[in-house]
Amino acid sequence: MGCESNEELNSFVEEARKYAEKGKVAEYIPALGRANPCDLAIAIYYPNGTCYSAGDVEKKFTLQSISKVIALALVLIDRGRDYVFERVGMEPTGDPFNSIIKLETMAVAKPLNPMINAGALVVTHMIKGNSIGERFERLASFIRTLSGDPSVSYCEEVAQSEYETAHLNRALCYFLKAHQIIKEDIEPLMELYTKQCAIEMNCLDLARIGLVFAMDGVDPINGKQIIPLDVARICKTFMVTCGMYNASGEFAIKIGIPAKSGVSGGIMGAVPCKFGIGVFGPALNEIGNSIAGIKLLELLSEKYQLSIF
Ligand code: GLN
Image (tube, rainbow, N blue to C red; front, side):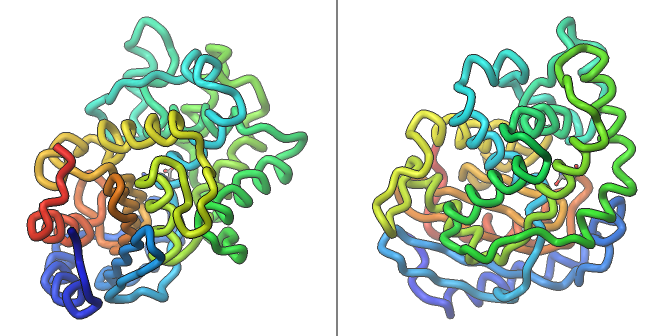
């Protein structure tokens, strides 16, 4: 069924950690460049509340792109799928996460999916609320509910660092504003988006969120349906088709778990009906996925036959 002890997970972590030296921490957001590339951690959360973990489990990291799937769940709940998919598509791109190219070359300027930056910016634009503060709080409180951790907050240093350097994301926003897909002022939207990306937690919290997705939106610890079934399914499908950027196909073949990664080195995994996974390893491969984290998931998936396919 799956891993049964911290010791077992530990041996996988130590095996996978060797791969960290082949990767590099993200530097385009200056504050992320200060991460320790050798860090590696994993947590697995089961529906009965049992949690196994190994490695640098206490280390906090920012969600970055992992927040995209959670923000998507929130706006699907708030606005319904017709409204959302009028403004963002459902297809993988095959391009890097921050690419602008398809926006200009496709007949309709709407972003291809909500897991690339252009699509995620449109999703953040759709978060309801009367002010940036209120919209951020709605997302943060949704994340606190999903993780079961009321202390979840954001890292001001990372948010500020990205806000100061996010010129490519600004360019995406202005392009989308020119095509009336984004309708608000860009600077406040950038503030909201960079705070969203800077929400931080450790891999135990992340595994618990993965568990809710794995259980079709139900938090099995308290029995509450936090995300409606159809929304959880849409999110998991995007995790499979676009969750690991333009390496999603290879990840589906080699590992076969709905997953979402971020440039801080986090990966959230949802093994349907079995467990949630949280991984943190800041050394990234060229695509922007945690290099040791992927190796770790590969070892786990092979050993426990976790592929959903
Ligand atoms: N905040 C990051 C950005 O917009 C998130 C990207 C990522 O994790 N791939 O560039």
